[in-house]
Length: 401
Ligand SMILES: C[S@@+](CC[C@H](N)C(=O)[O-])C[C@H]1O[C@@H](n2cnc3c(N)ncnc32)[C@H](O)[C@@H]1O
Image (cartoon, rainbow, N blue to C red; front, side, top):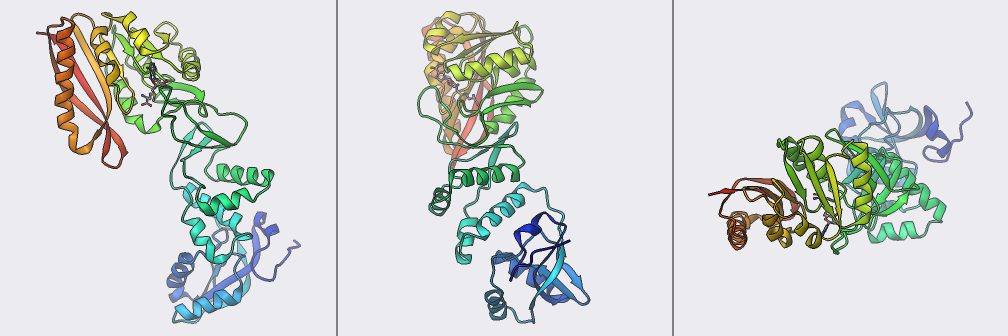
């Protein structure tokens, strides 16, 4: 097979071949581990190709962007054993499925021909370490590829080239579409401000503990970090219960309570038309038309119409659902019931917050002539929301004295 051999390193044409002729660093096998660590630390290794043993020596493939003389000088000034640079033939490495490594490789290749060697570590230190996946859409965090150097790198690209970059990032992370989160809007719709970087649409569909979800991820938020809480809620038996979900969203909890907890009816109250679109889709997809009733509008208007009917109220708004506590007390049946109160609370203040909350709920109950005993048998710690702040759920039981 004809191969183009560049002056130093592997040619672009070789990337899709099973062998390549490229630059290698060779040392005696007993020094191989030290050399590998050194080259790796300096981002010099081309991990697409497999290191090779040649008699008593180990050959490690080097990235194309490096000029042999500079690499040789760096090695000679840092290592005490003999290392020689040579062009040899390598075989393709079996690429790891680890998405972090795949992302690293993809980004290295984009930078390889365009960014000066000394700047590479700075770029590499800013690549994303976390992302979420819904369906085949990868959602990067807000600051991914947004540092000054990445902004300049991307802004200098033609639109089509930038699109190719985002496509490669999506593929390296095992997706087909790519989006980047912007902060959740501080309005009461909690609108998602996700920016679609690659792909035609933000609509996603997926299964979560046996429940089907569907929504436009560029329009509404979905916190995949609440997975344990969705699971827990779905394990609480609610047979024959009437449940109110005051901040239903796309059905994060409503769907689990209807499908897995077997609630008789879930009144899903929600304000955002985009969330309601997803909720309606999922109600049908999960065959829950009989058990989910959607109340479109502000809780201050919908909840008063549901006073006195519920066995359970789920209040899932962060940072706080306090604005509807008084409504929720009035929504419970005269005999009482359960509340699940979500809240972000400072780590050091959780016990005090629980006590204060129970005092407030008892006050509302008394105000509305409920002679109830109000206790909290359980407080669930869902996740760390930010440093020192926990997302918790307080389970509250109200029953007649
Ligand atoms: C952040 S989402 C719920 C998140 C979900 N509990 C989770 O953990 O992933 C909160 C939902 O409450 C809705 N919402 C906020 N204020 C509301 C109000 N006053 N009345 C009705 N819905 C409201 C928002 O539109 C949003 O869909």
